[in-house]
Length: 252
Image 1: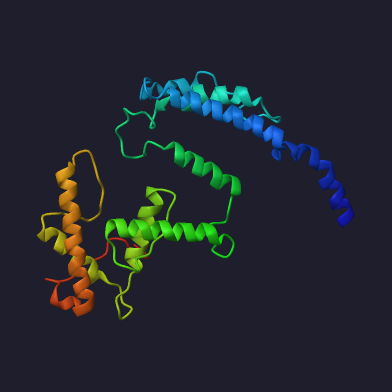
Image 2: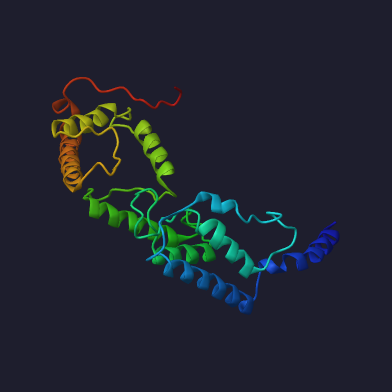
């Protein structure tokens, strides 16, 4: 049984060899990919921030998924005309949206290095350096925002997962007695409202100017200061009225 399995794996080895290129092949692929990236970046300064989405369908691959590999240079050319070019160019200096961000070259290099090492960063004993780096980044962000010492968090893949994480965290939060802290959630809303900010969530849009954002940051900071005093002195001393009811429940 084992010998037959070994023979089968040996027979498949030549077919999988292209997935493990040697140093020379890696260098050639890297040069092609870097040249493609350089050409893309050079075109950002004068190029349009939006191209007709129909361009994505002008020259499709036939078939889209071939049984054999394709020429790397040809595939990069396809990537440029059918993927990079059509639609919104988020890396353009004329792209003004905030979702998604514009992209940074250093971040692209970081993504490449992280993907190359492919560390299991969600498991500290498997990737202690990556886990430490995430914790250090979160601690730095907490200091920048002004969170108290000992604040913790996690890095997510994007806004959707971040919002889901925040919703579940808020739903499952407990007070000192182990009960859901709906009163404390209400306290933050109450204190923000007192300062002229209606804040069921924090979402920035183009309708908000610098003054609006500064006012929100100030209101949140003052609300959290009251929150801290309520933790120390009792919520009943600060909450006015009854707590609001949760929107998201384990079973709606």
